[in-house]
Amino acid sequence: MLHRLLPLLLIIGLITFVTVNFRLVQREIVYKLGISGDLTTSCCTVDQVLKADGKFDENASIAIFNSQVIDYPKTSLAYAYSQSLAQSSNNDQAVLGTTNEAGEEKWIEVSLGEQRLRAWEGNKLYMEFPISSGLWAATPKGTFNIWHKTRSQTMSGGSQTLGTYYNLPNVPHNMFFYKGYAIHGAYWHNNFGHPMSHGCVNSPLASVAQLFEWAGPVVPSGQNVAHASPDNPGTKVVVR
Picture 1: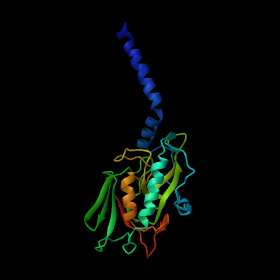
Picture 2: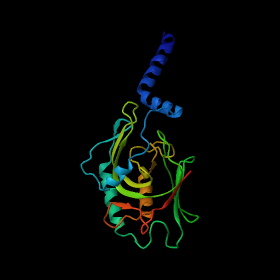
Picture 3: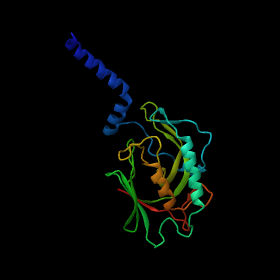
Picture 4: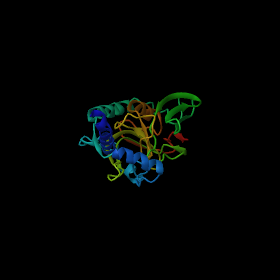
């Protein structure tokens, strides 16, 4: 009797699996076909970047990723923010973010094929870690410079219909290298090494915090934003 029911049970199981995972399957299919309809191409507009004050939002209490409420580590993010502020007061402002003490150029390499970021001082590797680049929209390739930094910022976009909507408060350590595209921390997933973004470069929290303090423009002591200038230039970013 059981062997007669087995095909029916398998069909029911398959239908259940497809139903539960419909949005995930839909996202993967439409992405691969290039017809997702999700028009979000970065975390923010340039205007949103410039209006952000970089401060930690104590009133934020919820985070949404892929149209689902996720665990929001508010306490640990607040602690990381306070540590970042404290570290800024100890920075050697004489050494700007484009060179090290030996005068060697600092630059950042983002390998989309390897899904890895490498920070260099001349030809010496300073640090390396896995990243997650664009899945629903491509991360732009080319040679850029970090033009703006914020310690903390809300990012939102995506599509409710397609299940790609996100509203993420207090995204940490944002380094904008092209328009609204940034290298920044990601607390909403741990799938580094695989594309997961709308074009930004998602990075592990501890690694990106170190990179933020190393790269230019230098954020002045006690402040939360920095805009690149001739006197405080941004570190070069090469995306390939």
